Length: 346
Image (cartoon, rainbow, N blue to C red; front, side):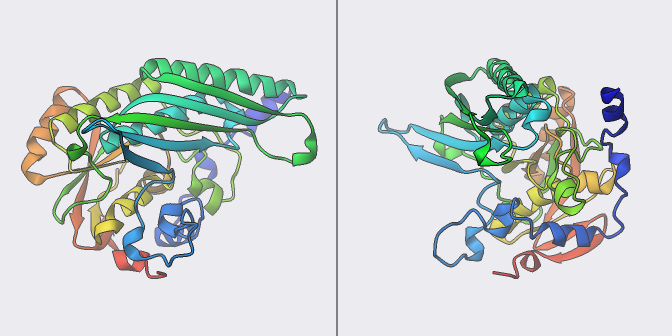
Protein backbone atom coordinates (compact mmCIF):
# COMPACT_ATOMS: atom_id res chain seq x y z
CA UNK A 1 0.00 0.00 0.00
CA UNK A 2 2.85 2.36 0.89
CA UNK A 3 4.50 1.86 -2.52
CA UNK A 4 1.27 2.67 -4.38
CA UNK A 5 0.87 5.88 -2.35
CA UNK A 6 4.47 6.84 -3.14
CA UNK A 7 3.86 6.19 -6.82
CA UNK A 8 0.76 8.44 -6.73
CA UNK A 9 2.78 11.21 -5.10
CA UNK A 10 5.81 10.80 -7.37
CA UNK A 11 6.96 14.11 -8.82
CA UNK A 12 6.41 14.82 -12.51
CA UNK A 13 7.21 17.97 -14.47
CA UNK A 14 3.49 18.43 -15.21
CA UNK A 15 3.00 19.34 -11.54
CA UNK A 16 4.90 22.58 -12.18
CA UNK A 17 3.18 25.22 -14.32
CA UNK A 18 5.33 26.89 -16.93
CA UNK A 19 6.29 30.38 -15.67
CA UNK A 20 4.92 33.29 -17.63
CA UNK A 21 7.81 35.60 -16.70
CA UNK A 22 11.17 33.98 -17.48
CA UNK A 23 13.01 37.18 -16.56
CA UNK A 24 11.62 36.95 -13.04
CA UNK A 25 12.90 33.37 -12.80
CA UNK A 26 16.36 34.46 -13.92
CA UNK A 27 16.72 37.26 -11.40
CA UNK A 28 15.27 35.13 -8.61
CA UNK A 29 17.83 32.43 -9.32
CA UNK A 30 20.60 35.02 -9.43
CA UNK A 31 20.47 35.30 -5.64
CA UNK A 32 20.71 31.54 -5.13
CA UNK A 33 24.05 30.95 -3.31
CA UNK A 34 24.41 27.52 -4.94
CA UNK A 35 24.95 29.30 -8.27
CA UNK A 36 28.13 30.55 -6.70
CA UNK A 37 30.19 31.43 -9.75
CA UNK A 38 27.54 34.02 -10.55
CA UNK A 39 27.13 35.32 -7.00
CA UNK A 40 30.73 35.00 -5.82
CA UNK A 41 30.04 32.87 -2.72
CA UNK A 42 33.00 30.61 -3.47
CA UNK A 43 35.38 33.49 -2.76
CA UNK A 44 36.19 33.41 0.96
CA UNK A 45 38.93 36.03 0.84
CA UNK A 46 38.76 39.51 2.31
CA UNK A 47 39.64 41.08 -1.03
CA UNK A 48 37.08 43.01 -3.04
CA UNK A 49 35.50 40.95 -5.82
CA UNK A 50 36.01 42.48 -9.23
CA UNK A 51 34.14 41.77 -12.48
CA UNK A 52 37.13 40.01 -14.00
CA UNK A 53 37.27 37.54 -11.09
CA UNK A 54 33.89 35.96 -11.70
CA UNK A 55 32.79 33.27 -14.09
CA UNK A 56 36.09 31.45 -13.63
CA UNK A 57 34.51 28.05 -13.07
CA UNK A 58 31.35 26.07 -12.63
CA UNK A 59 30.16 25.22 -9.13
CA UNK A 60 33.15 23.01 -8.34
CA UNK A 61 36.76 23.80 -7.55
CA UNK A 62 39.24 23.01 -10.32
CA UNK A 63 43.01 23.39 -10.24
CA UNK A 64 45.76 23.03 -12.83
CA UNK A 65 49.33 22.51 -11.71
CA UNK A 66 52.66 21.68 -13.32
CA UNK A 67 54.74 18.65 -12.39
CA UNK A 68 58.49 18.50 -12.07
CA UNK A 69 58.81 16.76 -15.41
CA UNK A 70 59.12 19.32 -18.24
CA UNK A 71 55.85 19.90 -20.06
CA UNK A 72 53.84 17.72 -17.68
CA UNK A 73 50.73 19.07 -15.97
CA UNK A 74 47.82 17.69 -14.01
CA UNK A 75 44.36 18.91 -13.15
CA UNK A 76 42.17 18.13 -10.16
CA UNK A 77 38.50 18.83 -9.39
CA UNK A 78 36.12 18.21 -6.51
CA UNK A 79 32.41 17.46 -6.74
CA UNK A 80 29.69 16.55 -4.23
CA UNK A 81 26.21 15.02 -4.06
CA UNK A 82 24.09 15.54 -0.97
CA UNK A 83 20.39 15.26 -0.18
CA UNK A 84 19.30 13.26 -3.24
CA UNK A 85 21.87 10.55 -2.68
CA UNK A 86 19.52 8.26 -0.75
CA UNK A 87 16.96 8.20 -3.60
CA UNK A 88 19.18 6.07 -5.85
CA UNK A 89 22.77 5.89 -4.52
CA UNK A 90 24.14 3.83 -7.43
CA UNK A 91 22.78 6.22 -10.06
CA UNK A 92 23.78 9.25 -7.99
CA UNK A 93 27.39 8.03 -7.83
CA UNK A 94 27.40 7.43 -11.58
CA UNK A 95 26.02 10.92 -12.23
CA UNK A 96 28.58 12.53 -9.95
CA UNK A 97 31.59 10.83 -11.57
CA UNK A 98 30.21 11.40 -15.08
CA UNK A 99 29.77 15.10 -14.27
CA UNK A 100 33.40 15.32 -13.13
CA UNK A 101 34.67 13.49 -16.22
CA UNK A 102 32.59 15.68 -18.53
CA UNK A 103 33.94 18.85 -16.97
CA UNK A 104 37.54 17.68 -17.18
CA UNK A 105 37.16 16.69 -20.84
CA UNK A 106 35.67 20.12 -21.61
CA UNK A 107 38.86 21.61 -20.21
CA UNK A 108 40.95 19.42 -22.50
CA UNK A 109 42.41 17.21 -19.76
CA UNK A 110 42.33 13.42 -19.65
CA UNK A 111 40.76 12.04 -16.43
CA UNK A 112 42.73 9.13 -14.98
CA UNK A 113 41.78 8.58 -11.33
CA UNK A 114 39.08 9.21 -8.75
CA UNK A 115 38.76 9.01 -4.98
CA UNK A 116 35.53 9.05 -2.99
CA UNK A 117 34.42 9.94 0.53
CA UNK A 118 30.94 8.90 1.68
CA UNK A 119 29.85 10.34 5.00
CA UNK A 120 26.92 11.05 7.32
CA UNK A 121 25.67 7.48 6.98
CA UNK A 122 23.50 6.33 9.90
CA UNK A 123 25.12 3.13 11.20
CA UNK A 124 21.92 2.05 12.97
CA UNK A 125 19.69 2.50 9.94
CA UNK A 126 19.54 -0.48 7.51
CA UNK A 127 18.99 2.04 4.73
CA UNK A 128 22.40 3.52 5.54
CA UNK A 129 24.05 0.26 4.58
CA UNK A 130 21.96 0.19 1.38
CA UNK A 131 23.17 3.69 0.48
CA UNK A 132 26.79 2.70 1.07
CA UNK A 133 26.42 -0.47 -1.01
CA UNK A 134 24.66 1.34 -3.87
CA UNK A 135 27.20 4.18 -3.96
CA UNK A 136 30.05 1.65 -4.03
CA UNK A 137 28.49 -0.21 -6.97
CA UNK A 138 27.89 3.02 -8.86
CA UNK A 139 31.44 4.22 -8.28
CA UNK A 140 32.97 0.95 -9.44
CA UNK A 141 30.70 0.70 -12.50
CA UNK A 142 31.31 4.22 -13.78
CA UNK A 143 35.05 4.02 -13.06
CA UNK A 144 35.24 0.91 -15.22
CA UNK A 145 33.24 2.57 -18.02
CA UNK A 146 35.53 5.61 -18.07
CA UNK A 147 38.75 3.63 -17.46
CA UNK A 148 39.44 5.42 -14.19
CA UNK A 149 41.61 4.10 -11.40
CA UNK A 150 39.93 4.29 -7.99
CA UNK A 151 42.65 5.64 -5.70
CA UNK A 152 40.81 5.67 -2.41
CA UNK A 153 37.40 5.02 -0.87
CA UNK A 154 36.37 6.08 2.61
CA UNK A 155 33.12 5.98 4.51
CA UNK A 156 32.17 7.69 7.75
CA UNK A 157 29.31 6.21 9.75
CA UNK A 158 27.44 8.34 12.25
CA UNK A 159 26.96 6.28 15.44
CA UNK A 160 24.63 8.73 17.17
CA UNK A 161 22.00 11.29 16.27
CA UNK A 162 23.68 14.29 17.87
CA UNK A 163 24.62 15.72 14.47
CA UNK A 164 20.99 16.34 13.64
CA UNK A 165 19.33 15.66 10.27
CA UNK A 166 22.44 15.76 8.10
CA UNK A 167 21.84 14.09 4.72
CA UNK A 168 24.20 11.41 3.38
CA UNK A 169 26.84 13.04 1.20
CA UNK A 170 29.24 11.71 -1.43
CA UNK A 171 32.33 13.75 -2.30
CA UNK A 172 34.71 12.76 -5.08
CA UNK A 173 38.06 14.13 -6.17
CA UNK A 174 39.24 13.50 -9.71
CA UNK A 175 42.74 13.75 -11.13
CA UNK A 176 43.55 14.18 -14.79
CA UNK A 177 46.56 14.51 -17.04
CA UNK A 178 47.18 17.43 -19.39
CA UNK A 179 49.04 16.15 -22.45
CA UNK A 180 49.37 19.51 -24.23
CA UNK A 181 49.00 22.51 -21.95
CA UNK A 182 49.01 24.95 -24.85
CA UNK A 183 45.85 23.29 -26.23
CA UNK A 184 43.68 23.58 -23.13
CA UNK A 185 40.18 24.93 -23.70
CA UNK A 186 38.50 27.24 -21.18
CA UNK A 187 34.78 27.67 -20.69
CA UNK A 188 34.82 31.40 -21.59
CA UNK A 189 33.36 32.63 -24.87
CA UNK A 190 36.19 34.00 -27.01
CA UNK A 191 34.74 36.50 -29.46
CA UNK A 192 31.62 38.06 -30.92
CA UNK A 193 30.15 36.14 -33.84
CA UNK A 194 31.15 32.69 -32.67
CA UNK A 195 28.50 30.03 -33.14
CA UNK A 196 27.02 28.35 -30.07
CA UNK A 197 26.07 24.67 -30.12
CA UNK A 198 24.88 22.21 -27.54
CA UNK A 199 26.21 18.68 -27.74
CA UNK A 200 23.62 16.18 -26.51
CA UNK A 201 19.83 16.15 -26.31
CA UNK A 202 17.38 18.45 -24.59
CA UNK A 203 14.77 16.69 -22.47
CA UNK A 204 11.77 17.88 -20.49
CA UNK A 205 13.36 17.39 -17.10
CA UNK A 206 13.76 19.68 -14.09
CA UNK A 207 14.34 17.00 -11.47
CA UNK A 208 16.67 17.95 -8.59
CA UNK A 209 17.44 21.28 -10.28
CA UNK A 210 18.19 24.55 -8.54
CA UNK A 211 15.24 25.97 -10.45
CA UNK A 212 12.82 23.40 -9.03
CA UNK A 213 14.14 23.59 -5.48
CA UNK A 214 14.96 27.30 -5.13
CA UNK A 215 12.26 28.89 -7.30
CA UNK A 216 9.38 26.44 -6.77
CA UNK A 217 10.34 25.15 -3.32
CA UNK A 218 10.10 21.48 -4.34
CA UNK A 219 12.82 19.47 -2.59
CA UNK A 220 11.64 15.94 -3.35
CA UNK A 221 12.08 14.90 -6.98
CA UNK A 222 13.92 12.36 -9.07
CA UNK A 223 17.60 12.63 -9.99
CA UNK A 224 18.32 14.51 -13.24
CA UNK A 225 17.84 12.61 -16.50
CA UNK A 226 20.93 10.51 -17.14
CA UNK A 227 22.06 7.78 -19.53
CA UNK A 228 25.55 6.42 -18.95
CA UNK A 229 25.96 4.86 -22.39
CA UNK A 230 24.99 8.10 -24.12
CA UNK A 231 27.37 9.94 -21.83
CA UNK A 232 30.25 7.74 -23.01
CA UNK A 233 29.42 8.44 -26.68
CA UNK A 234 29.23 12.21 -26.15
CA UNK A 235 32.45 12.36 -24.20
CA UNK A 236 34.29 10.38 -26.89
CA UNK A 237 32.99 12.91 -29.44
CA UNK A 238 34.22 15.76 -27.24
CA UNK A 239 37.71 14.24 -27.20
CA UNK A 240 37.70 14.06 -31.00
CA UNK A 241 36.50 17.66 -31.32
CA UNK A 242 39.40 18.78 -29.14
CA UNK A 243 41.92 16.81 -31.17
CA UNK A 244 40.56 18.19 -34.44
CA UNK A 245 40.66 21.72 -32.94
CA UNK A 246 37.05 22.35 -33.93
CA UNK A 247 35.94 24.08 -30.70
CA UNK A 248 37.00 27.35 -29.08
CA UNK A 249 35.32 26.91 -25.70
CA UNK A 250 33.48 24.13 -23.92
CA UNK A 251 31.32 23.98 -20.78
CA UNK A 252 29.32 21.14 -19.22
CA UNK A 253 25.70 22.16 -18.70
CA UNK A 254 25.62 22.17 -14.92
CA UNK A 255 24.12 23.99 -11.96
CA UNK A 256 21.38 26.38 -13.00
CA UNK A 257 20.97 24.64 -16.36
CA UNK A 258 21.75 25.95 -19.82
CA UNK A 259 21.05 29.61 -19.04
CA UNK A 260 23.56 29.83 -16.19
CA UNK A 261 26.08 27.81 -18.19
CA UNK A 262 25.75 30.40 -20.96
CA UNK A 263 26.09 33.18 -18.41
CA UNK A 264 29.26 31.68 -16.93
CA UNK A 265 30.71 31.47 -20.44
CA UNK A 266 29.73 35.04 -21.34
CA UNK A 267 30.83 36.93 -18.22
CA UNK A 268 34.67 36.63 -18.35
CA UNK A 269 35.06 38.54 -21.64
CA UNK A 270 31.98 40.73 -21.31
CA UNK A 271 30.17 38.99 -24.16
CA UNK A 272 26.54 37.97 -24.61
CA UNK A 273 24.48 35.44 -26.53
CA UNK A 274 21.53 35.27 -28.89
CA UNK A 275 19.91 31.83 -28.79
CA UNK A 276 16.76 30.08 -29.98
CA UNK A 277 15.14 27.51 -27.72
CA UNK A 278 13.98 24.05 -28.69
CA UNK A 279 10.29 24.37 -29.57
CA UNK A 280 9.65 20.78 -28.47
CA UNK A 281 10.87 21.41 -24.91
CA UNK A 282 9.31 23.55 -22.19
CA UNK A 283 11.21 26.82 -21.99
CA UNK A 284 11.86 26.54 -18.24
CA UNK A 285 13.17 23.00 -18.71
CA UNK A 286 15.29 24.06 -21.68
CA UNK A 287 16.87 26.95 -19.79
CA UNK A 288 17.05 25.73 -16.20
CA UNK A 289 16.79 21.92 -16.26
CA UNK A 290 19.94 20.10 -15.20
CA UNK A 291 19.69 16.88 -17.22
CA UNK A 292 23.06 15.22 -17.73
CA UNK A 293 24.86 14.57 -21.01
CA UNK A 294 24.88 18.12 -22.43
CA UNK A 295 27.87 20.27 -23.34
CA UNK A 296 27.92 23.91 -24.45
CA UNK A 297 30.36 24.56 -27.31
CA UNK A 298 31.67 27.61 -29.15
CA UNK A 299 32.63 27.02 -32.78
CA UNK A 300 34.43 29.39 -35.12
CA UNK A 301 32.16 30.11 -38.15
CA UNK A 302 35.01 29.07 -40.46
CA UNK A 303 35.03 25.61 -38.88
CA UNK A 304 31.28 25.17 -38.55
CA UNK A 305 30.87 22.99 -41.65
CA UNK A 306 33.59 20.59 -40.54
CA UNK A 307 32.11 20.53 -37.04
CA UNK A 308 28.60 19.73 -38.30
CA UNK A 309 29.87 17.13 -40.78
CA UNK A 310 31.79 15.32 -38.04
CA UNK A 311 28.80 15.10 -35.67
CA UNK A 312 26.26 14.32 -38.40
CA UNK A 313 28.44 11.59 -39.86
CA UNK A 314 28.61 9.84 -36.50
CA UNK A 315 24.97 10.49 -35.63
CA UNK A 316 25.97 12.45 -32.52
CA UNK A 317 23.02 14.56 -31.27
CA UNK A 318 23.58 18.31 -31.24
CA UNK A 319 21.56 21.51 -31.34
CA UNK A 320 22.46 24.85 -32.95
CA UNK A 321 21.68 27.41 -30.24
CA UNK A 322 22.72 30.70 -31.82
CA UNK A 323 25.71 33.02 -31.70
CA UNK A 324 27.82 35.15 -29.39
CA UNK A 325 26.97 38.86 -29.21
CA UNK A 326 28.90 41.92 -28.14
CA UNK A 327 27.09 41.83 -24.79
CA UNK A 328 23.34 41.60 -25.28
CA UNK A 329 21.47 38.56 -23.93
CA UNK A 330 18.66 37.41 -26.23
CA UNK A 331 16.43 34.35 -26.05
CA UNK A 332 13.85 33.70 -28.77
CA UNK A 333 14.15 37.30 -30.02
CA UNK A 334 13.47 38.70 -26.57
CA UNK A 335 16.16 40.88 -25.04
CA UNK A 336 17.11 40.42 -21.39
CA UNK A 337 19.45 43.36 -21.36
CA UNK A 338 23.25 43.34 -21.40
CA UNK A 339 25.86 41.32 -19.60
CA UNK A 340 26.79 44.22 -17.31
CA UNK A 341 23.21 44.10 -16.02
CA UNK A 342 23.97 40.64 -14.66
CA UNK A 343 26.97 41.91 -12.70
CA UNK A 344 25.62 45.30 -11.68
CA UNK A 345 25.94 44.44 -8.00
CA UNK A 346 29.72 44.39 -8.22
